[in-house]
Image (cartoon, rainbow, N blue to C red; front, top):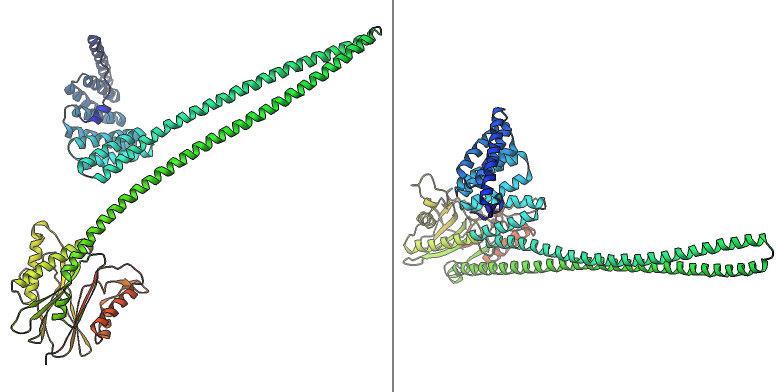
Length: 600
């Protein structure tokens, strides 16, 4: 049985020494409850009847007679509903759940605990809600539904934090740490275990504070003892004052006696003189005693003030140091962990970048096949979802050149994976002897759908492609596009060849038998062609923070097309950076430019 239910089950006291007496007491209790139930039924008092059914069920459950307990609980639920007694309805549902837990019928237990939770929420009774949440979570865990159990335990934890219920917090932290540990959520497991340990440490700190309070009480006792000494001094002073008053009374009596008789004048004068001396001595003793009392009082007050200040200062300083040190240690550990993770992630990304660059960069082939060309390649992240691809088709004389600018779904690591699949697929297609631009895109579409198993998985990833084949021997540029266009400039005029509206891979095209189109451009005069992804024209910037747009991009290409290709690349790079004005790059940027001369 789940340990949580063991903690929350009602405690049954078993009299081991007198089992017969305990059994007799239970039977007597059942008989009494049965009579009360019968009276409530006769009186048509549904509330009382529901209550007595619930109490009888508890007695049977204590005796492990779960079948009878279930019968009475079923009646209690019906009558509580009829009486609209939500508190009793909650208790009946909850006890029914415990009966099913004892019978290991966890599905039925979960249903009853969920009903109890709904009733508790209707009543908006916080303690009932917390109990029900914990029991629903425990039942879900028993059925292997870890996510559901975690949801309810985390809600219970939130309420425990709001109500400062430390015991429930500890239980929630422990259960959540165990649940995430089973599901492989190591980070969450560590987080909840750390919170659990933090509460334990705080409780130990409170015990330390209690020790400090005991020391403070001891100091107060010492102060009280000093006060008693002060009281003793005051008592002595009062006695001296009494003696002084007695002396004064004696003096008055002596003076009265002198008026009575002159014969004792000399004797009276001597007595009077002695009394005055005695009075003066007593007054001096009184003044000295008062001075000593005042001095001792001031000294004790100063000592108490200093002692209390030192104690309070030490406590505050100790608490502050503890909090600062604890926070500093946690921050150091957190920073170390974050730094370690960042280094690991960055190392992996940099390695992926080196792999992608190795597959992209083939400067010798570019110079050999397209000597007058440039590639502006600006990934948004370390690695890119855009890529360019150059290959040759072997012929009798000069080889035909294939060049493509490809924009894959996503950017960063996901886009980089797609780009590597795309490059490998294009290389495989060319190696099979496919030599027409439209056929290359048809085959690439099949390769991507097969590689990603899109017919089975429903995966929607794909790529937009602008692909051209320059057939120098025939003086022709062939072009096919999957969504992406090609711009070429002849005789200071801009022309645009649109790609088909469908992409490579991704959403299935409705007309499966229709392939990609092929366009042809005669290179009978100097021509500059540009293949590109949508990153350049979609970049936000400028005064109004708008996109660069295709029209502005085409005008810029027309303006710079006669310049050397390397200078064109620099102008394009500088222009887009100025347009961004320090803003974040929106997408990967790729522009490929090639100057083709007419073969005279």
